[in-house]
Amino acid sequence: MKKLASFALVAFAAACGTGQPNSPDSQLAADDPPMLGVHWTKDEAARRAAAGDINEAAKGARRSPNMTYHGGKIMPTAVSKIIFWGPSWSNSTFVGDKITGLDSWYTGHSGSNYAKTSDEYTGTNGQVGATTTHQGHIIDTSTASGGGSTSAILNEVCKQITAGNIVPDAGGNGYYAVYTDLKRGNAGYCAWHSAGTCGGKAVQFAFFWNLDGDAGCDPQDSTTGHSQGLAALANVTAHELSEARSDPASPGAWYDSSGAENGDKCAWTFNVPSASFPNGTAWKMQGEWSNAAYTAGTGYPNSSGQKGCLDGH
Ligand SMILES: [Zn+2]
Image (tube, rainbow, N blue to C red; front, side, top):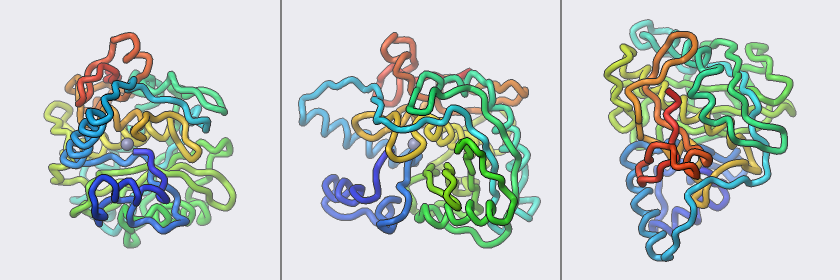
């Protein structure tokens, strides 16, 4: 979801009457970067969809579900680097296939049909393109911070840049994905993306819980052979990277009248068992919203029955 921290509290209060202690934005300090593209758990996504349907019915409105442009930048390309953060990333049993798998996910993403599901979106700095570059990973075995603070995750990214472990992309297209070893607990979201600056340079970044055994964030992949924990991270990874490319920062680029970005609008819908990447890997990933597909009637339906999702297979 696209919500600025400053008015997220108001929105939650209006919807619920009381604050939501587990809502991610409510924990942010006033000067934290906004939490964008929150990938809600299955339960939380369903609750929000139902509330939205009620609001729409009350208004008697039938607006187009398409996203509109809000005047900001997109990411013409993405230069990714993974930070695996937390002491468990030195434990081979915990790691399993997750490190090699996520590196192959990001490498394989470039030029894939899945990458092309976000290609129609333009911004002040050009158009989203299907080519992305992966620069591998680093492991930081210091204790990780949770997803409740965008500043804490941005600080981790800046720490790695200061240490010389990341050379930020000169074009501002750096995307730094922070995979922690922390369990989600009661948080209603699986991941989010945001943006900020490190030493005056613009960076995009994302946060991920450890989703091993987490039913609320599980795509239930039974065909690719990946471990459950890797399969779950790959699905939320697809969601966040697609949103970062089409709506990276404030002021925003592409989102709908409810603040939903292209990943949000097709969250937890899977049109095919898996989609293949050019490097030969296959992944079970949710679809991504396409305004063009919705308008042409060629997409598959999202959880509200709107036929604007592309599966990228
Ligand atoms: Zn999202």
